[in-house]
Structure formats: structure tokens, C-alpha cells
Length: 292
Image (cartoon, rainbow, N blue to C red; front, side, top):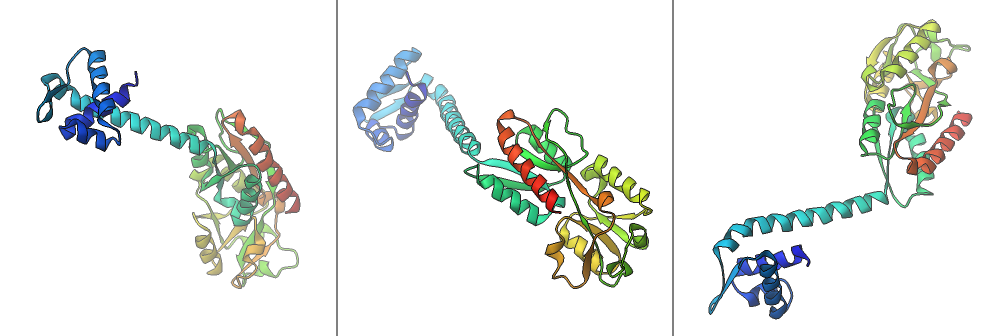
């Protein structure tokens, strides 16, 4: 017996107070509704509706059970809705990438994913946040900065992507024949906050210090903030897509300390079923890394 279907008969009759009107509401004829309600009453062992010459009215048992019937019907509807959402979500790859990768690399990865997935949803966040989202299942995979704490997640190999240094156009390093990182000592360093990924942040600062630069950090969370600070002549930053900045007259992208400033990325995911997509994304990163 389909309990939810028969409960719908009961609720419709109770709320309409008439079998004919309940049947019209359910887009059915009256006999199946009446028969279904009798079947439900027999199954429960109690009379729910009293048939009268004027229509139908609730019995004491029906009055007590009606709120519970409504809840069960609502729960069933929510259950089916959630199942549909999960079904639809399964067909869409949900992935994320740290904002440090830039728009060009993100677009390239989205293009690769589109070749093997019927749909995709992309999120940009910090490494710490992305790992949390993959761990909780709200994302299928993510491109994060390495090193990082991945916990039980499956982590792919580290891929190195070279980065240029963005400096103010008026700074001597912008036109120097052989610029060095130590030449940037008077500028703040625009970078994401340490909380975005402490291990990678500390490693980057250590590499800069080993190259003769002990920078003062200017935490930023968006590319607009980076460009504003560098264009104002007070800071430098790192970029994995210098070509995007070519049209910005106030800044220059120069190649300095490529090993020290390189961006190290890896793909993390939770389920082995996503492994094929992770391999495709990793291969795309390798190709980008070789070209940088």
C-alpha cells in the first residue's frame, strides 16, 4: 500500500469536506478517492472520515491524525526534492580554485573540464576554505596552493607555475636590466592573508628572505586591491598571468626570482570517482606550468 498516496486522499477530503471536491483537487474521479480512503482506514484500524449527507467530516481520530498526515506528506515532498537535487548535482562537477591562479588559468581549466563533464559550477576561495568544502562534499575537487594541510583528501602531484612580479611603472626595477628581489625592499608585498594557507604563506616568505628581501605584508583579498596598491607606487605583488596586465600603464610585470616566487598548485578531491577529472585538471596545470 502506498501510504503517502492514501494520506493525500485523507488530507484532501478532510480539507475540502467533500469527496467530489477532494477528487477534483487531486485531478481524479471520486470512486478511487473514496475507495482509497476506506483502504487507508482499514489499514490503520480507525475511521478517519465520517460520511454524511452533506459531504464528509473528521472523526475524533481523524482530527488527531490530520496534522501528522500533513507532516508526512510534506516530508515526502522534501525527500523527493532532495533526491532530485542530488541527482541533478551528480551530473554537475562542482570544483574550486584559489584566486591566486588568476582568470586565464581558471578559464583554461574550465574549458578542459567542459570536455568531460556535462556541466560545472566553479568557486573561488582560499586554500583552507576549498579544502573544507571538498572535505564536506560541497565541492568535488579543488585546485589549491601547496604546501597545505589536506587531511584525508586525495592529493595529486605538485605542479609549479612561474609567476612574474608586478611593480609600479615608476619603480627602478621596472626598467632595470637585471632586477633583483632585494631591489623591492622599499615596497609593501601585496598578498593574500596568512590565514588563507599558513604553510604556503610561510614557505613563500622564507624564500623571499633567502633571496635578500624581508617584505612587509599588505594583506589583500582581490585583484582590484592588488592593482590599486601597486599602481599607487607603494607595493609589489605576484601574478601568474602577466599578459592580462599588459594594458595597465601604471604597472609593469618583470621576471625576478622565478624559483622563489613560483606558485605551487595541486588538485585535491575526496572520492576516487572524481580521479579521472582530477587527472585532466592536473595535466592542464602541467601544460600551463611548462609554458610559464
